[in-house]
Image 1: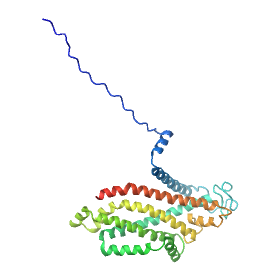
Image 2 (image 1 turned 120 degrees about the horizontal axis):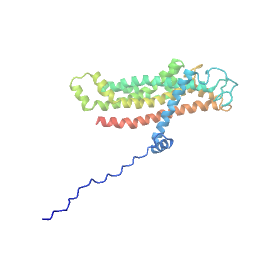
Image 3 (image 1 turned 90 degrees about the vertical axis):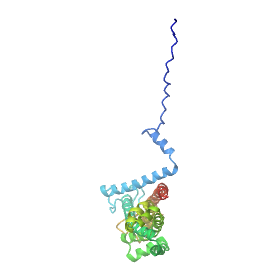
Image 4 (image 1 turned 180 degrees about the vertical axis):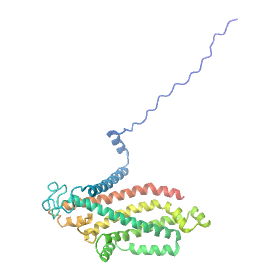
Length: 312
């Protein structure tokens, strides 16, 4: 009997697929960073530029106050109305003072004053808007009509009127910014709060006997926080613009302090002989307003769609 010499073939494992090449991210090299920047949309690039602009302005202001960067704002350093580079990095003003430390002082005053005013306006608008949106009826009608009365005045006219009544200065400028920004913020927050108040979870809380203050604090406030932040950035840009207008007209910050509006007003008197006095504070004012508006647009695009999905 012949033995069967046929062997059953042993199955072999399939060959391993070649490793998938990972996309090159560039690491930390400058070429990788450049490719990352080019891959971003135009709006993302503008947002990053705006954010870094504000960071630089705030950092330079803090350094000037902590380390005396550029010298004392009121110190005479050279001749009157010298161009940039001779007696100072940005030149000198009509009294021979270096423009750089006065510009840094003006940036700090404008940003701090506007931020404090907008923070106070946000607190007032949030309280009024949530109450109006939740209560509705006559309460909302009264709050809305009071806001319409203030909103009917042109912004700069209302600011000048308030500053004239309270006497020009920082308290008057702060009050003017608050009264100018509260009406629009209140209306937008009330609209968002009204939408939230109609949702099922708010209705269920009402039926369960939860207090109105608790509903407004726990259910409505968190859902309108994005609207508050977005409107706050827009209000900040308006506040900076109002402060600049008041300073230019002589109703805002007064000497010996400095603000961007006051520096523009001083520089406008020497536009022919020393145009650099108005260029530097004007550029900083425009850059700050545009940067804040771009940040507000980015926050609106990122947060408001998410809130809309949460409310459905």
